[in-house]
Image: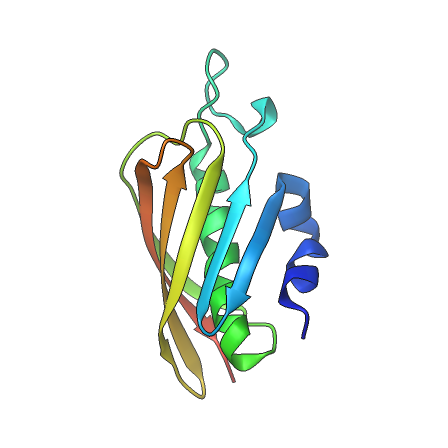
Length: 127
């Protein structure tokens, strides 16, 4: 399965501009170029929480897909927003557990100045 192509063809991720840049061996990375229409603030580019969440969820799923080589629907995701997401964003994800029915992934989302803006844990269906 070509993981990067799979996620490039996902309509919602494509709409937001989420790009999976690496996905192999239970690790994934991705980025999102911040745009005015993704901001919650009219005066300054600051990522809406849903944008940050979508980046975390997509990159988290990519990390698990790299292990199971099939789509993994999200069961649950918990996210802690730690700082405002200003500028372009990037995320890094690592599989914590890859089971026959469920997989767990930890994801960190950063702003372009390397500030950690969100910490997430996703649970995905693997079987």
